[in-house]
Image (cartoon, rainbow, N blue to C red; front, top):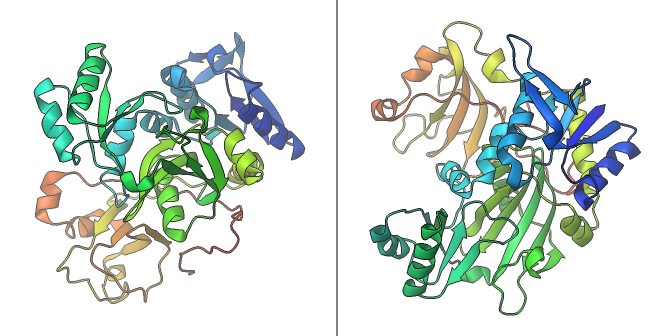
Length: 410
Protein backbone atom coordinates (compact mmCIF):
# COMPACT_ATOMS: atom_id res chain seq x y z
CA UNK A 1 0.00 0.00 0.00
CA UNK A 2 1.20 3.49 -0.83
CA UNK A 3 -0.04 5.81 1.91
CA UNK A 4 -0.01 9.59 2.21
CA UNK A 5 -0.28 11.17 5.66
CA UNK A 6 -1.50 14.76 5.37
CA UNK A 7 0.16 16.74 8.14
CA UNK A 8 1.77 20.14 8.62
CA UNK A 9 3.76 18.77 11.58
CA UNK A 10 5.87 15.81 10.39
CA UNK A 11 7.83 15.62 13.66
CA UNK A 12 4.89 15.63 16.08
CA UNK A 13 4.26 12.42 18.03
CA UNK A 14 1.08 11.34 16.19
CA UNK A 15 2.48 11.80 12.68
CA UNK A 16 5.76 10.14 13.62
CA UNK A 17 4.02 7.11 15.13
CA UNK A 18 1.74 6.67 12.14
CA UNK A 19 4.69 6.85 9.76
CA UNK A 20 6.65 4.33 11.85
CA UNK A 21 3.68 1.94 12.07
CA UNK A 22 3.21 2.02 8.28
CA UNK A 23 6.92 1.47 7.63
CA UNK A 24 7.03 -1.45 10.08
CA UNK A 25 4.27 -3.10 8.06
CA UNK A 26 6.28 -2.64 4.84
CA UNK A 27 3.96 -0.02 3.39
CA UNK A 28 5.31 2.86 1.33
CA UNK A 29 4.48 5.99 3.29
CA UNK A 30 5.09 9.72 2.88
CA UNK A 31 4.12 12.68 5.05
CA UNK A 32 2.82 15.47 2.82
CA UNK A 33 2.42 19.04 4.04
CA UNK A 34 -1.25 19.84 3.51
CA UNK A 35 -0.51 23.47 2.67
CA UNK A 36 1.86 22.58 -0.20
CA UNK A 37 -0.90 21.21 -2.43
CA UNK A 38 -2.48 22.90 -5.43
CA UNK A 39 -5.94 21.79 -6.53
CA UNK A 40 -6.46 21.67 -10.29
CA UNK A 41 -9.97 21.46 -11.71
CA UNK A 42 -10.92 20.67 -15.29
CA UNK A 43 -13.56 18.64 -17.06
CA UNK A 44 -13.46 14.97 -16.01
CA UNK A 45 -9.89 15.26 -14.69
CA UNK A 46 -9.63 16.35 -11.05
CA UNK A 47 -5.94 16.57 -10.19
CA UNK A 48 -3.53 17.54 -7.44
CA UNK A 49 -0.09 19.10 -7.52
CA UNK A 50 2.36 18.90 -4.64
CA UNK A 51 5.18 21.43 -4.48
CA UNK A 52 4.26 22.49 -8.03
CA UNK A 53 4.71 18.95 -9.41
CA UNK A 54 2.02 16.45 -10.43
CA UNK A 55 1.19 14.19 -7.50
CA UNK A 56 1.97 10.52 -7.99
CA UNK A 57 -0.66 7.87 -7.33
CA UNK A 58 -1.54 6.91 -3.75
CA UNK A 59 -3.72 4.04 -2.57
CA UNK A 60 -4.90 5.79 0.58
CA UNK A 61 -4.77 9.08 2.45
CA UNK A 62 -4.79 9.61 6.22
CA UNK A 63 -5.78 13.24 6.91
CA UNK A 64 -4.38 15.00 9.97
CA UNK A 65 -5.97 18.38 9.30
CA UNK A 66 -5.38 21.01 11.99
CA UNK A 67 -8.15 23.34 13.13
CA UNK A 68 -6.41 26.42 11.73
CA UNK A 69 -6.45 25.05 8.15
CA UNK A 70 -9.81 23.26 8.12
CA UNK A 71 -11.12 24.93 4.96
CA UNK A 72 -8.07 24.29 2.78
CA UNK A 73 -7.35 20.93 4.38
CA UNK A 74 -10.83 19.58 3.70
CA UNK A 75 -10.62 20.91 0.14
CA UNK A 76 -7.47 18.81 -0.39
CA UNK A 77 -9.15 15.73 1.11
CA UNK A 78 -12.21 16.36 -1.09
CA UNK A 79 -9.96 16.41 -4.16
CA UNK A 80 -8.47 13.04 -3.21
CA UNK A 81 -12.05 11.76 -2.93
CA UNK A 82 -12.83 13.01 -6.44
CA UNK A 83 -9.75 11.12 -7.63
CA UNK A 84 -11.11 7.89 -6.07
CA UNK A 85 -8.35 7.63 -3.48
CA UNK A 86 -9.45 6.03 -0.20
CA UNK A 87 -9.54 8.64 2.58
CA UNK A 88 -9.52 7.38 6.17
CA UNK A 89 -11.77 10.30 7.10
CA UNK A 90 -14.11 11.97 4.65
CA UNK A 91 -13.92 15.71 4.02
CA UNK A 92 -17.54 16.17 5.12
CA UNK A 93 -16.90 14.31 8.36
CA UNK A 94 -13.89 16.48 9.15
CA UNK A 95 -15.87 19.68 8.50
CA UNK A 96 -18.89 18.52 10.49
CA UNK A 97 -16.88 17.46 13.53
CA UNK A 98 -14.69 20.55 13.59
CA UNK A 99 -17.67 22.83 14.27
CA UNK A 100 -19.02 22.00 17.76
CA UNK A 101 -22.48 23.36 16.98
CA UNK A 102 -22.80 21.49 13.71
CA UNK A 103 -21.55 18.30 15.39
CA UNK A 104 -24.18 18.46 18.14
CA UNK A 105 -26.89 19.43 15.64
CA UNK A 106 -26.18 16.28 13.63
CA UNK A 107 -26.01 14.04 16.70
CA UNK A 108 -29.18 15.54 18.20
CA UNK A 109 -31.51 13.83 15.73
CA UNK A 110 -30.19 10.40 16.69
CA UNK A 111 -30.47 8.29 19.83
CA UNK A 112 -27.13 9.57 21.12
CA UNK A 113 -26.84 11.18 24.56
CA UNK A 114 -25.58 14.79 24.49
CA UNK A 115 -25.57 17.52 27.16
CA UNK A 116 -28.43 20.02 26.93
CA UNK A 117 -27.03 22.81 24.72
CA UNK A 118 -28.24 26.12 23.26
CA UNK A 119 -26.87 28.66 20.79
CA UNK A 120 -28.06 32.28 20.77
CA UNK A 121 -27.02 35.60 19.25
CA UNK A 122 -29.52 38.10 20.63
CA UNK A 123 -28.68 39.46 24.08
CA UNK A 124 -32.34 39.14 25.12
CA UNK A 125 -32.20 35.38 24.50
CA UNK A 126 -29.23 34.70 26.81
CA UNK A 127 -31.08 34.46 30.15
CA UNK A 128 -33.94 32.26 28.82
CA UNK A 129 -31.32 30.03 27.16
CA UNK A 130 -29.43 29.57 30.42
CA UNK A 131 -32.67 28.62 32.17
CA UNK A 132 -33.51 26.09 29.45
CA UNK A 133 -30.27 24.19 30.00
CA UNK A 134 -30.91 24.02 33.75
CA UNK A 135 -29.56 27.31 35.08
CA UNK A 136 -26.17 28.12 36.58
CA UNK A 137 -23.56 26.80 36.70
CA UNK A 138 -23.19 26.46 32.92
CA UNK A 139 -20.40 25.70 30.49
CA UNK A 140 -19.64 28.32 27.85
CA UNK A 141 -17.74 27.08 24.77
CA UNK A 142 -16.21 28.75 21.75
CA UNK A 143 -17.36 26.90 18.63
CA UNK A 144 -13.87 26.17 17.36
CA UNK A 145 -11.78 25.85 20.52
CA UNK A 146 -9.44 22.88 20.93
CA UNK A 147 -7.60 21.14 23.79
CA UNK A 148 -9.84 22.82 26.36
CA UNK A 149 -9.12 26.35 25.13
CA UNK A 150 -12.27 28.46 24.98
CA UNK A 151 -14.18 26.40 27.56
CA UNK A 152 -15.37 28.42 30.56
CA UNK A 153 -17.35 27.46 33.67
CA UNK A 154 -19.74 30.21 34.80
CA UNK A 155 -20.90 29.76 38.41
CA UNK A 156 -23.76 32.27 38.26
CA UNK A 157 -26.24 33.59 35.73
CA UNK A 158 -24.77 37.11 35.95
CA UNK A 159 -21.26 35.79 35.32
CA UNK A 160 -22.47 33.72 32.38
CA UNK A 161 -24.33 36.67 30.90
CA UNK A 162 -21.25 38.92 31.22
CA UNK A 163 -18.93 36.32 29.63
CA UNK A 164 -21.28 35.66 26.72
CA UNK A 165 -21.78 39.37 26.09
CA UNK A 166 -18.03 39.97 26.13
CA UNK A 167 -17.29 37.10 23.75
CA UNK A 168 -20.07 38.10 21.38
CA UNK A 169 -18.76 41.68 21.31
CA UNK A 170 -15.51 40.28 19.87
CA UNK A 171 -17.48 38.44 17.14
CA UNK A 172 -17.04 35.05 18.83
CA UNK A 173 -19.73 32.39 18.48
CA UNK A 174 -20.42 30.59 21.74
CA UNK A 175 -22.45 27.64 22.98
CA UNK A 176 -24.18 27.50 26.36
CA UNK A 177 -24.17 23.98 27.75
CA UNK A 178 -25.55 22.26 30.82
CA UNK A 179 -22.92 21.60 33.49
CA UNK A 180 -22.97 17.86 34.14
CA UNK A 181 -22.10 17.90 37.83
CA UNK A 182 -22.01 14.11 38.22
CA UNK A 183 -19.05 13.91 35.80
CA UNK A 184 -16.97 15.55 38.57
CA UNK A 185 -14.31 17.01 36.30
CA UNK A 186 -13.89 13.75 34.41
CA UNK A 187 -14.47 12.68 30.84
CA UNK A 188 -13.78 9.65 28.66
CA UNK A 189 -11.86 9.55 25.40
CA UNK A 190 -12.80 6.55 23.25
CA UNK A 191 -10.58 5.98 20.23
CA UNK A 192 -12.64 4.59 17.35
CA UNK A 193 -11.12 2.85 14.33
CA UNK A 194 -13.65 1.50 11.83
CA UNK A 195 -16.45 -0.06 13.88
CA UNK A 196 -14.38 -0.76 16.99
CA UNK A 197 -13.25 1.13 20.07
CA UNK A 198 -9.57 0.14 20.06
CA UNK A 199 -8.58 2.06 23.22
CA UNK A 200 -10.14 4.24 25.88
CA UNK A 201 -9.05 6.32 28.84
CA UNK A 202 -10.59 8.44 31.54
CA UNK A 203 -9.22 11.97 31.94
CA UNK A 204 -9.46 13.57 35.37
CA UNK A 205 -9.10 17.28 36.12
CA UNK A 206 -6.61 18.27 38.80
CA UNK A 207 -6.93 20.84 41.60
CA UNK A 208 -9.53 23.55 41.00
CA UNK A 209 -9.45 23.01 37.22
CA UNK A 210 -12.74 21.61 35.88
CA UNK A 211 -11.34 20.80 32.42
CA UNK A 212 -9.92 17.31 32.21
CA UNK A 213 -7.83 17.79 29.05
CA UNK A 214 -4.27 16.51 29.37
CA UNK A 215 -3.12 19.86 27.91
CA UNK A 216 -4.78 21.52 30.91
CA UNK A 217 -2.87 19.34 33.38
CA UNK A 218 -5.45 16.56 33.59
CA UNK A 219 -4.47 13.04 34.71
CA UNK A 220 -5.42 10.01 32.63
CA UNK A 221 -6.03 6.35 33.38
CA UNK A 222 -6.81 3.41 31.07
CA UNK A 223 -10.33 1.98 31.30
CA UNK A 224 -12.32 -0.81 29.69
CA UNK A 225 -15.60 0.61 28.46
CA UNK A 226 -18.85 -1.31 28.74
CA UNK A 227 -20.91 -2.14 25.66
CA UNK A 228 -23.16 0.91 25.96
CA UNK A 229 -20.25 3.36 25.93
CA UNK A 230 -18.51 1.51 23.08
CA UNK A 231 -21.65 1.47 20.94
CA UNK A 232 -22.28 5.15 21.61
CA UNK A 233 -18.73 6.08 20.60
CA UNK A 234 -18.80 4.02 17.41
CA UNK A 235 -22.23 5.30 16.38
CA UNK A 236 -21.25 8.92 17.04
CA UNK A 237 -18.19 8.51 14.80
CA UNK A 238 -20.22 6.79 12.08
CA UNK A 239 -22.95 9.43 12.19
CA UNK A 240 -20.28 12.11 11.71
CA UNK A 241 -18.85 10.16 8.77
CA UNK A 242 -15.52 9.39 10.45
CA UNK A 243 -13.64 6.08 10.38
CA UNK A 244 -10.88 7.27 12.72
CA UNK A 245 -12.06 9.47 15.60
CA UNK A 246 -11.61 10.39 19.21
CA UNK A 247 -15.04 10.52 20.86
CA UNK A 248 -15.19 12.46 24.12
CA UNK A 249 -17.99 11.55 26.53
CA UNK A 250 -19.16 12.57 29.98
CA UNK A 251 -20.39 9.97 32.45
CA UNK A 252 -23.96 11.16 33.00
CA UNK A 253 -26.49 9.67 35.40
CA UNK A 254 -28.35 8.02 32.52
CA UNK A 255 -25.31 6.96 30.52
CA UNK A 256 -22.76 8.47 28.14
CA UNK A 257 -23.10 12.06 26.93
CA UNK A 258 -21.08 12.87 23.80
CA UNK A 259 -19.47 16.30 24.01
CA UNK A 260 -17.14 16.18 21.01
CA UNK A 261 -16.05 14.02 18.09
CA UNK A 262 -12.46 14.70 17.03
CA UNK A 263 -11.42 13.90 13.47
CA UNK A 264 -7.67 14.22 14.17
CA UNK A 265 -7.28 12.75 17.67
CA UNK A 266 -3.81 12.85 19.16
CA UNK A 267 -2.05 9.56 19.85
CA UNK A 268 0.51 10.49 22.47
CA UNK A 269 -1.77 10.77 25.49
CA UNK A 270 -3.82 7.65 24.86
CA UNK A 271 -0.94 5.44 23.67
CA UNK A 272 1.13 6.46 26.70
CA UNK A 273 -1.81 5.82 29.01
CA UNK A 274 -3.01 2.49 27.57
CA UNK A 275 0.31 1.12 26.21
CA UNK A 276 -1.56 0.01 23.08
CA UNK A 277 -0.37 0.26 19.47
CA UNK A 278 -3.17 2.52 18.25
CA UNK A 279 -1.13 3.80 15.31
CA UNK A 280 -0.77 0.20 14.13
CA UNK A 281 -4.51 -0.37 14.46
CA UNK A 282 -5.16 2.64 12.22
CA UNK A 283 -2.68 1.50 9.56
CA UNK A 284 -4.04 -2.08 9.61
CA UNK A 285 -7.56 -0.77 9.14
CA UNK A 286 -6.60 1.46 6.20
CA UNK A 287 -4.67 -1.38 4.53
CA UNK A 288 -7.66 -3.70 4.88
CA UNK A 289 -9.95 -1.10 3.33
CA UNK A 290 -7.60 -0.63 0.38
CA UNK A 291 -7.45 -4.40 -0.17
CA UNK A 292 -11.21 -4.83 0.28
CA UNK A 293 -12.91 -1.47 -0.34
CA UNK A 294 -16.39 -0.65 0.87
CA UNK A 295 -19.18 -0.50 -1.68
CA UNK A 296 -21.02 2.81 -1.84
CA UNK A 297 -24.58 1.48 -1.91
CA UNK A 298 -25.88 4.94 -2.76
CA UNK A 299 -24.25 4.56 -6.17
CA UNK A 300 -24.36 0.78 -6.62
CA UNK A 301 -27.86 -0.11 -5.47
CA UNK A 302 -29.85 2.72 -6.99
CA UNK A 303 -28.92 2.04 -10.63
CA UNK A 304 -32.18 0.16 -11.23
CA UNK A 305 -34.94 2.65 -11.90
CA UNK A 306 -37.46 2.77 -9.08
CA UNK A 307 -35.15 1.16 -6.50
CA UNK A 308 -33.23 2.86 -3.73
CA UNK A 309 -32.16 2.91 -0.09
CA UNK A 310 -34.09 4.53 2.73
CA UNK A 311 -34.69 4.31 6.47
CA UNK A 312 -38.07 3.09 7.70
CA UNK A 313 -39.16 3.83 11.27
CA UNK A 314 -41.38 1.53 13.37
CA UNK A 315 -43.41 3.97 15.55
CA UNK A 316 -45.64 3.16 18.52
CA UNK A 317 -48.84 1.53 17.32
CA UNK A 318 -47.31 0.22 14.11
CA UNK A 319 -48.81 -2.96 12.69
CA UNK A 320 -45.30 -4.39 12.44
CA UNK A 321 -44.62 -4.38 16.20
CA UNK A 322 -44.36 -7.95 17.52
CA UNK A 323 -43.95 -9.44 14.06
CA UNK A 324 -40.77 -10.97 12.72
CA UNK A 325 -39.16 -9.48 9.64
CA UNK A 326 -40.47 -12.49 7.71
CA UNK A 327 -44.02 -12.03 9.04
CA UNK A 328 -43.96 -8.30 8.22
CA UNK A 329 -44.25 -9.09 4.52
CA UNK A 330 -41.47 -6.67 3.60
CA UNK A 331 -39.71 -9.18 1.41
CA UNK A 332 -42.97 -9.91 -0.41
CA UNK A 333 -42.99 -6.21 -1.33
CA UNK A 334 -39.41 -6.52 -2.67
CA UNK A 335 -37.96 -4.70 0.36
CA UNK A 336 -34.80 -6.10 1.95
CA UNK A 337 -33.69 -5.05 5.45
CA UNK A 338 -29.97 -4.30 5.37
CA UNK A 339 -29.48 -3.02 8.92
CA UNK A 340 -31.66 -2.75 12.03
CA UNK A 341 -30.99 0.10 14.49
CA UNK A 342 -32.40 -0.46 17.99
CA UNK A 343 -31.45 2.27 20.44
CA UNK A 344 -27.66 2.38 20.27
CA UNK A 345 -27.43 -1.20 18.96
CA UNK A 346 -26.64 -1.78 15.28
CA UNK A 347 -27.67 -5.16 13.85
CA UNK A 348 -26.36 -5.67 10.30
CA UNK A 349 -28.13 -8.22 8.07
CA UNK A 350 -30.79 -9.13 10.66
CA UNK A 351 -32.26 -12.61 10.43
CA UNK A 352 -35.81 -13.10 9.18
CA UNK A 353 -37.01 -14.32 12.61
CA UNK A 354 -35.86 -11.09 14.34
CA UNK A 355 -38.94 -9.60 16.09
CA UNK A 356 -39.59 -5.91 15.42
CA UNK A 357 -40.10 -3.47 18.30
CA UNK A 358 -41.42 0.08 18.64
CA UNK A 359 -38.67 2.58 17.91
CA UNK A 360 -36.74 0.29 15.56
CA UNK A 361 -35.25 1.89 12.46
CA UNK A 362 -34.71 -0.26 9.38
CA UNK A 363 -32.22 0.61 6.66
CA UNK A 364 -33.83 -0.97 3.61
CA UNK A 365 -33.16 -1.48 -0.09
CA UNK A 366 -36.07 -2.05 -2.42
CA UNK A 367 -38.85 -0.52 -4.46
CA UNK A 368 -39.12 3.17 -3.61
CA UNK A 369 -42.86 3.13 -4.29
CA UNK A 370 -43.42 0.38 -1.73
CA UNK A 371 -41.19 2.01 0.88
CA UNK A 372 -42.72 5.43 0.35
CA UNK A 373 -46.12 4.07 1.30
CA UNK A 374 -44.72 2.96 4.66
CA UNK A 375 -43.72 6.47 5.73
CA UNK A 376 -46.54 8.34 7.56
CA UNK A 377 -48.04 11.24 5.62
CA UNK A 378 -46.91 13.73 8.26
CA UNK A 379 -43.29 12.54 8.02
CA UNK A 380 -43.37 12.72 4.23
CA UNK A 381 -44.50 16.32 4.36
CA UNK A 382 -41.92 17.23 6.99
CA UNK A 383 -38.85 15.88 5.25
CA UNK A 384 -37.66 14.16 2.13
CA UNK A 385 -36.61 10.57 2.11
CA UNK A 386 -32.97 10.14 3.14
CA UNK A 387 -30.46 7.99 1.26
CA UNK A 388 -27.86 6.44 3.51
CA UNK A 389 -24.82 4.22 3.30
CA UNK A 390 -24.22 1.25 5.53
CA UNK A 391 -21.93 1.87 8.52
CA UNK A 392 -18.31 1.12 7.70
CA UNK A 393 -17.09 -2.24 8.92
CA UNK A 394 -13.53 -3.01 9.91
CA UNK A 395 -12.13 -6.45 9.15
CA UNK A 396 -9.56 -5.90 11.88
CA UNK A 397 -10.18 -7.65 15.18
CA UNK A 398 -10.86 -5.45 18.17
CA UNK A 399 -8.22 -4.94 20.80
CA UNK A 400 -11.10 -5.85 23.16
CA UNK A 401 -11.45 -9.51 22.06
CA UNK A 402 -14.12 -10.32 24.66
CA UNK A 403 -16.67 -8.22 22.78
CA UNK A 404 -18.56 -9.77 19.89
CA UNK A 405 -20.63 -8.15 17.18
CA UNK A 406 -24.33 -7.68 17.73
CA UNK A 407 -25.03 -8.62 14.13
CA UNK A 408 -27.03 -11.64 12.97
CA UNK A 409 -25.30 -13.95 10.53
CA UNK A 410 -27.10 -14.88 7.30
